[in-house]
Length: 156
Image (cartoon, rainbow, N blue to C red; front, top):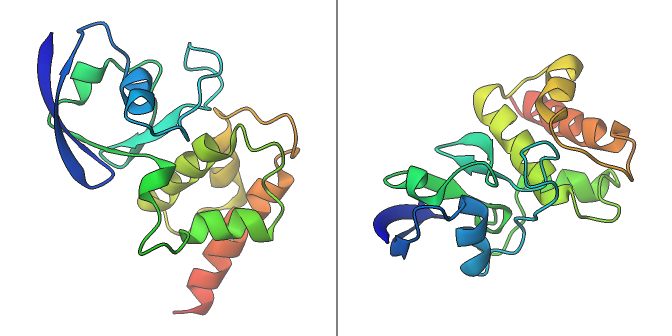
């Protein structure tokens, strides 16, 4: 066992983990069920979380590799019970259908907006291309992100 200290959704945790345990398994064992397992190979994006603000597929990261780092899941986006602007925009633009890919897609968008608050349509497409969605056709997702960026420009 390896003892790690990890900040998950703003809370520091000291946990003993098996050196072979994946980050996705640690998160799900902690009850963070927004992190879905799809392909187990980092190809589908359903397990995407933020590691120090950057999108990573948690099925390809070992838990001990997150030692000393900050992990954010969809559960960590709400503030005082209020949805994050991305979550709200997904709802308003019907960017949620079956919902399986939604948490990973939202985290990929969050990573994009952390790095580039005013992405082009092409930037948005590139940012979500590692997240597979069989239901939406991607256009509602792109529109949701464009709504967010338009609103942030309008507010300035």
